[in-house]
Length: 602
Image 1: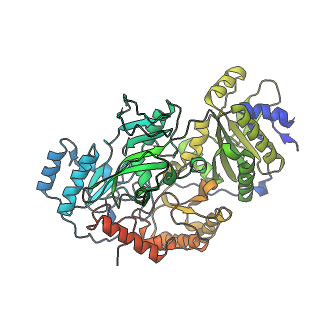
Image 2: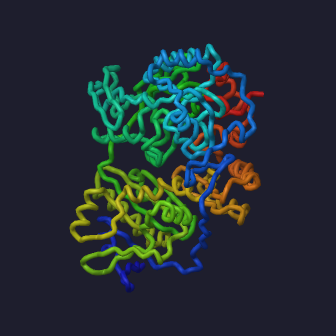
Image 3: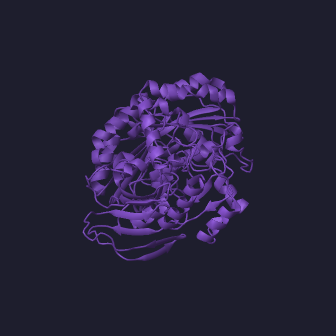
């Protein structure tokens, strides 16, 4: 099959020629599809305020967010009110770390999407599990409600108060306790970087499991990954909010992210937890053993519990070795069936080196380009057939209806590039892929840029930003209604198509993107402003549709405040009742993150 790669005129290349370009970091384009094959684009409208269950970060962002309790007409549960004596106690317990400053409280009372707002009057910043224990013991005795908070990057309103709950922040619990790369012997060290302190202690000298990190819950995910990369390892978790999110919050919400296809979920990589219960009891299950079959695996209760059963204060997690070779391909596909077929082919041909397979539709790419100023690397990027290859960007050229981002990671760059090139050749010749660009590690890209003077190069970080920043782009498009569902891969995009047909012109944009490798769709609907009628058209339809195909209404974001009342679409009544019994047993007064995750007991 001939492949057209042009710069001002048609040109033909054999696959070996194209492979030399792709293997170093190149951009290539197949024969352009006809206009009839392109999906029409909707108009982009000025962003505005979001309300209801929708999410928003419109510009300007200083529009005050309505109080959640008033917007939803909620009744406050019979918790005690915070008194001056209470504040005095906490200020004595945590000198300088019991904050009543209105400005600092305002930032912690609102989620980062500015969709929900509480009215807490006290922010506590403990540094140790012992301090958390003292805080919760006092709150339990006084019947004071508590809202645990990590990086406050959640998308379902689970990390901010609903009423006046005390905010318990893990921001200062940011110490790396230890890292065991091979021997199980923990090394003493002290490192300070970016406001985070790392220190080591000696623990369990008989443990001999490689790549085990023990850290406090307030460590920022990206800083943990930087720490590990210096030692030849990485975190098994990666997501767009990594620069702000805390590992404790990741575990509490069972965050999925971009590496789940390769490394699995946190339920498999978290080895142990330290948790403080509602009455102040410290539950030390911070094991570093990969195999421990003694009784119930209690840590699984707290993974994904969203701070309703206990406050996670420390984590022991298994960390894979840093891949020596990473390749990234950003490809265009003509329809979603080809996206699926490409994944099947990709999984077969790439096998063990496949680490991510992400997809997004054309509208997602348009929003990223419009609102964030990023460039589509496979629209209008062409190369000539001369010895010196020059890439030219032309925004007049159209894009693809769908895009996929494929990452491989392994230990042998030659082996991995050969496998990736074989897949790309198969995908191109079979028509699964129409155009695309490939990036390898930064050193190779920089070396080739110096050699042939390519003016337009997409490094892995740039390609990843196209996917990771979709959420940010959407917040600039108006009021955003966000849904995070799991579905059989074959039905994944049908929900987007059906929602577009259902909403018609009442919605501004209906877009879909997500983790195809684990059947996770992020459905997003934008509108000029919040509308009750639009929300009624979306919910409960989206949940009924998901349940009809045996899906889950929350794949990785959790239930939080916004989705707790819809849990019955994914869990039978018996399961919900059992969860409520666990909650009543571990937190009999219900002070931990009330109004979240579970519907109220009958």
